[in-house]
Length: 397
Image (spheres, helix red, strand yellow):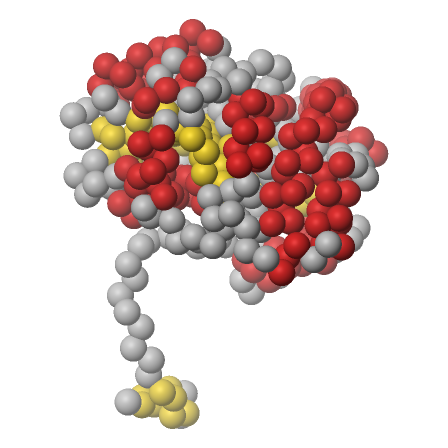
């Protein structure tokens, strides 16, 4: 079938009705698509990378040496163990100090989150998560559940996090999952042991599940696992993208009791396993972690201190959460009358890649800029020079 369009005859393509709704990533000014933008950021070797919470602080160490050795040995010619190498399972459990748990190795924490939603949710269920937060979790839940409740948390009253009190106010007979992003992307808030215990109590009392996304756990000053207190009701999401600096090779895991992990295996698409090279790097990373973890954490903490000192000198902007227990924080721009997208576009022209709030919030996207700081300190100093100039320029507009 053909139709006439602008005096041209074109073939009409019958596209099936969209099965799942997914919010489209809007590209910054000057880019046709989001993919074009991210390709630009990847290819721009002068870019200061503060927009994707990636870790650029690893030097040549056991992680990259293991991946290089794997390539030299042409291990990529083989398929890996489809659920991940047993050695990797054991090392993850040891890292978390968990016993009697099963592990499934995935192509990153994001895939892990999708597998959890797919395996647990029924059409009548609802899910509790927060705004701001990692919105793709809600997008996954919306594919399988009746409703996703985005609880607003961008305020001092709840200390900028989803609290047990807020969960109790929003829970109902159809609630199936509570999502805890801990520490929280984008704010960097985390939970006390007492709060974690209370979340565990809620899950047990209501016979529901906790999805505990601990992607940024290793940047935190201290951290506690719901799996310690509600093991049969928790699926823990583990990532190698951040503290291990392996975002580009896509590897993560889901940890839970055996029946829950067996249920996840039933919805797996990638049943030929995860990248062998990535798994070798992950094994090396876990084994060598004591050698480099303090350097990564201390450098990140000192970097956020530099940002805090700079922000304190700029009128009408502030850090809602400081110190951050992740490798990112948000800068509130509302007092200066500046929209976050305008700020990120301005800084991009200075070769500084940051992220406007609408990537992590439906409600507060114009309010804040998210910046990550697990990058070389010299690059943080460049940001600290350019940001005050950007505020003054955009304030005048």
